[in-house]
Length: 114
Image (cartoon, rainbow, N blue to C red; front, side, top):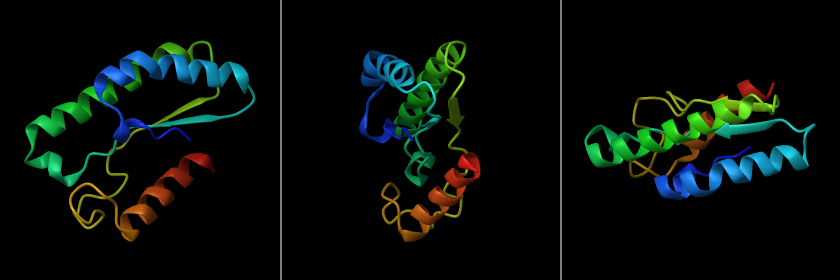
């Protein structure tokens, strides 16, 4: 399960994500690799700069996934749309997940794993 976007900026994704994912897929060809988009946090509703950065990172990650999917069949891409809900109750400060946010995140990821 790869959920690294919250700790990266766009340049880091461009510089390292494809290399890392392809090496992981080569090293463990039998393993399913789940690639998770950056969540759209409630703060992005009012903060257009954050919203743009999240969208750009997700778009870049999806493009990398599409290019690698041709050679590595065990890649699974998980879109962030509504993964933590849209009621604003999933974060304590608009960014960091609450217990409810983690529960929703886990339940939505589990749907893909099953």
